[in-house]
Length: 176
Image (cartoon, rainbow, N blue to C red; front, side, top):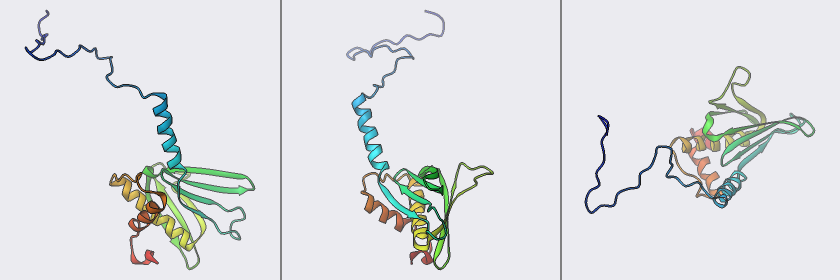
């Protein structure tokens, strides 16, 4: 035995643990059935729409769509019939949500942690006023819940949407 090496001696009456080399892993890889089940759960939750808003037709010839689901926000900017730019942002990546509203219409601006000079924020204009405010409240509520590490998977879609809407209310003006 070389200088500086210690040899562990087993204690009498205790079983000796098996020797493991550093490259041996004690974790067991999940089976294909477990992987399919986890992906199925993620897929079913991702398809749960918490809220959807469309832009108003006369102001946008091809309406844009804003969809909020359990894992992300998707914005479809339509340029022509069956032509769209689809942007998806994870809820965890959203930093701030702003709603600019007037008496009839509004817009929503989503700021994320990933931005550049070309797209500092994602914007959807010409939403109905109530659609812009509700989307802002739900997104802001979801951002707050995510920052506090609240697990929202146990709630059904309708209940989660109502609770996030309540959590996202900031000022009394938004409650109308």
